[in-house]
Image (cartoon, rainbow, N blue to C red):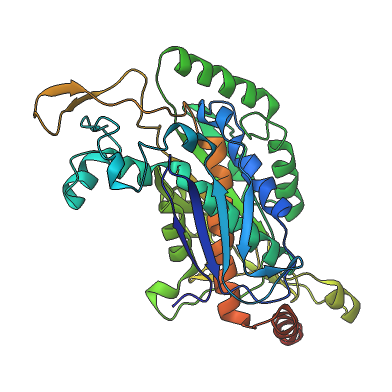
Length: 408
């Protein structure tokens, strides 16, 4: 059972999105401004749709925080949907407003529409598409921002960058697997200045051109992004049961994001194309002075080190002290302005699929969502390892662990 649990609720055009996060120790400093920074990042990116011009997401902290610090009780967050004013009757909870909006009966290929309608016995696809919409991820980003704040207290940083949109690639990505934490943070910093969150200015320009072309053709684009975590201590996760392995838990969390179709840790599928001697991260040891050990961060406490990071920071389901690197593939948005062929669920006749206002390319935003899901997962396994009902207790446990690690 997870120590850090969260739930979300809300529909795309409903009144609001709501999230509850349970298990955060007391004494963690948090503010709405901290959370809003990531909500703003999620809304940016060339290729986003008209909805982003309407929404300007802002979180309201309802519970679990007093005078700027967590108090140990569940944290409840509220994000208003500003577009709800145009859907008051159409998304009303009152039976008196039934049929105020025509039923949606033309399912979109690649979306949850048809399977969800059959599963839940719904003859208006809006009852499926409203919840399955990626609008829900706004509140996950908000919850993830709290997890990031928590991990930051222990020297960990989480970031992301785009390495591919359509067929346009940022080809330096494999070098990153052999890179330092400093380089990863540098790539993240550069990506934050790009309209598509790609670290390479020239490649960013080509990605923008490709998105513009897709817009003109009334089509959509997917892509690939990487999420990294630096400052990770050795020993998060476990090898003893399949469901305790950290790489499996990360894959589950990331595959749970709308439109995600693939997750790789480190070299991932590329590792299968090489000999074992070519891809295993060999282990070395360099004795450290007591002063060096005292100044070491969470990933460099002991004298053990690697010259490569093909495993992406995880071996045997556990962190090995190297940066965690995850690559995630996002399919093109299934809602197209040039609709695909479908079948009306009521008449059973061939039709063009429904068009709902949507993005052309949401890969830059998906990177921010990926950060949030990684943060929530890492924070969960961190609390499993170190426990603590208060930040003081958790830090004491954490520091005690590193006193032990320094002896290795």
